[in-house]
Amino acid sequence: MRKKIEKNFHWIIAALATLFLGILLLLVYTRPAWIDESWFAAYAIHFIRTGEIADLNMARFTDELPHTYFFYFYALLQAPFYYLAGESLLVGRLITLLGALLGAFAIYMNFRRYFGLHTISALLTTLAVVFTYYFIYSATQIRPDLIAVVFVLTGMIFLKNWMEKGSTLWLILTHLMFIFAILLHLQAGFAWVGLWVFLCINRLNIESRIRTIGLSLPVYIAIALLFVFNEHFESNMHTYYETFFGTGNMAGHKGGMIGSMITKFHNGEYLKLAIRMGLLLFLVFNFLYYIRIRKIGVFLNDAFFLVAGASFGSWLLTTTSIDDYHAVWLTMPFMIMAYNMVVGTKFVKYINALFFLLLITPSFLFAYKTIKAAPLQQQRDQIQKLNRTYDLPRKKLFIDRDLMWFYSFGENVTYRMKDPTAMPEYLLLRKAAHPKKDSTQFEGSVYRLIDETPLFLLYRQEK
Image (tube, rainbow, N blue to C red; front, side, top):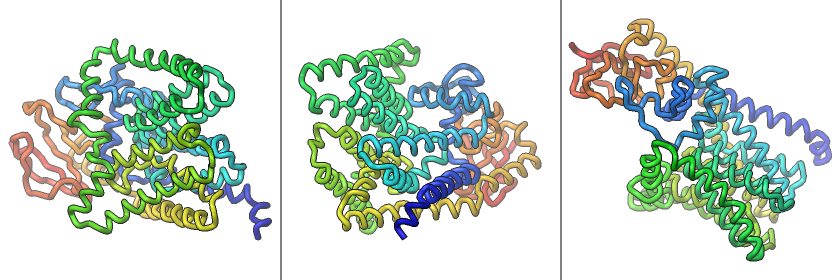
């Protein structure tokens, strides 16, 4: 049986890879428009139309357009695709899907380079990681998180080249990959700390460390100058400060997983607490087991361990929900788990294989339910019906942010008001987010419910 599997291994891998790509494509075409996707894309689309990077719809009906570095690089990354292929939701999602495919290759290369796995084991462990719910969930929506992870994984490959060849170019490329990841999402700052811990304490002599740091600093100085000479420098520095040290909280999740577990304990939600504790302890167990089986000075000389540990810290301190997209930063810890599954004892192999089954099963359930229901098509059909009936594209319209795609980010629509005198004629709201009422107050004006669909409520301003 084993020889038969090995003989047909390339066909098995091809079938699994095709299944993976098929699931991603189907989810891209069927997932509902999600509230943050239009927000992330708006910066890029506004840049294409005006040459300025700002939130296209933050204050429509007025001239106010806030700026933030948080999405500058992501906007520039997306812009060529929207320019060439059109300003559509599907194009934006396909950008992330392309990133996911590059990420799968980067995962495979890391398994080969850092872990020394042969081709068959590297392919199987790669598939185990990319089929997890967190990877597939993040790979099929417009968000920078997964692409930031891909930059970190690519940086790890360049770092390995520098470690083996000693070329300055590879070190510079490594830093650029980590900087790009941070510019995509601040959560990548945790992985960057892991990189610097490795560069500062790995087994290099003092002279080599000084030279390494000296080669690294010009990259950061050049990036810093881009910030300093930008007209929005002050406001952006305030944004960064608030995110890391002020009243803001990293990734919008106050307290992270630790805070979440404390909350669950105080609320008496012991099952949810146990699930979080179980995942936490299992990840810690795998890190400790990795140290044991590698039998090397892990804390000083294993770059992958340090960056994966920092990525684990990012999940622990920023992600409050078990099924949150920010958990894609567990990709590198999952890679350590997959490695343990290949080289560990029978007990470790079986328990990790079972755990991966628990991580992969939700991927198929999520894909099946989403593809079967095709919620994006439902949204599209119902909005088109309302548009035809009330000629909404020609009217001044306030909508939920995720619906901007259905109005081509047009000038007549907005999802946030800054000027109460610039009132919309209609409100188009999702039932999932707004309770149904015969009339509703908006910015001091009364709006009457005039129509509804299974998903949406349409209100018109009373004269």
